[in-house]
Length: 185
Image (cartoon, rainbow, N blue to C red; front, side, top):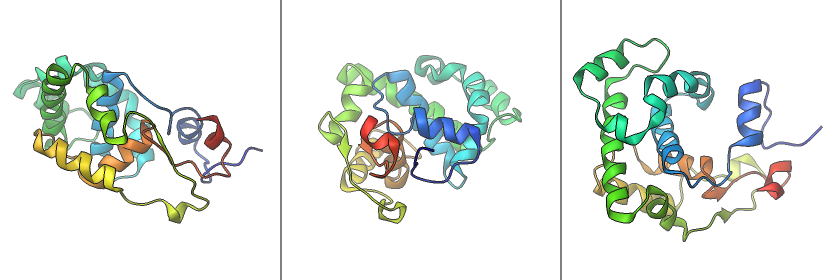
């Protein structure tokens, strides 16, 4: 049996750990999806979000930033009535706001990818943690990202959320050194 960072019982969480977490992402739509899901996760477990991920993809038109940026009050009301997602008005309106901010960032920098990866110098930071308790809540890079994103008008992008985002999209490799994924990424 392969060693993992944490004990994973739920097959959805197992699949996420084994195939997604920490794998570098450079596609703007997927980066936007992770940013929104990390913000939605605030105050909840990641497993809760994973279980609703497909519903979120359906409800938010596949997380296409241009489509989500055009959402209006009817869309907000539709989303607030959707039992398949986490129905929090602030999180829903922040997703729409953040789609608009992503588009502005793309207009300025050519892609969200080229902007967001600047916070780690364009390449993944590889940590060498041996215990889960060694993982920080956030780093200087996440703090800088949070401040910069807030300055650009993004919402739900505190340093802890930014660090979770960085872990998810492979900006940092926080798999424990004993985990079979550590060396693969």
